[in-house]
Length: 193
Image 1: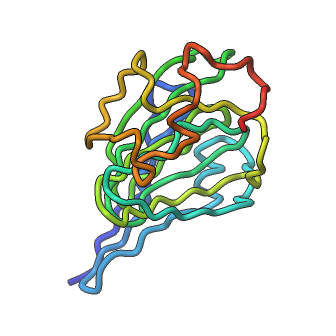
Image 2 (image 1 turned 90 degrees about the vertical axis):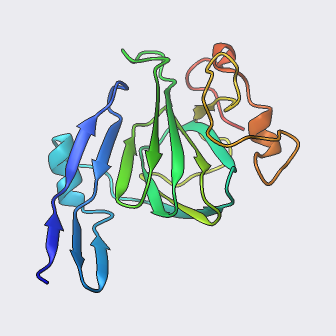
């Protein structure tokens, strides 16, 4: 069987600058090769030079676990390497034309999201051992600029697919459960603790 090539695809979302990407993929009898990062493709997509990744993180999460919503002052390329996740993105940039817009989508291997600086990123693992990859254009540091929002904010009304016990630290961190609601956001430029 000859290899099947699926070309790179991208689509905009209702959040200014937030892009959903389908990675280039080659399938053959042995399995699949996915192109997780190609600088020239991203530069072409964004119309200019981009900063290379300065930090790459991989999280492993149990089914139902939530991480986020965090909008640090860095651009992120995120996606699932194994398993599935429910991705949530919130525009927390006060000067953005899409400020306050919420986008959700199910992530699977081969689907990535380019998250602009200041847009909050979060997810819920839908499978045990869900592997979620983050590529950052800056190194994360405690106290860096950005915002963080409570992922259980009732006004956001995020329809998390799996039930959440807020007392179970294997599902949500103490820090995340006590983050401010979106309406209480600190002014831009204040630090995320």
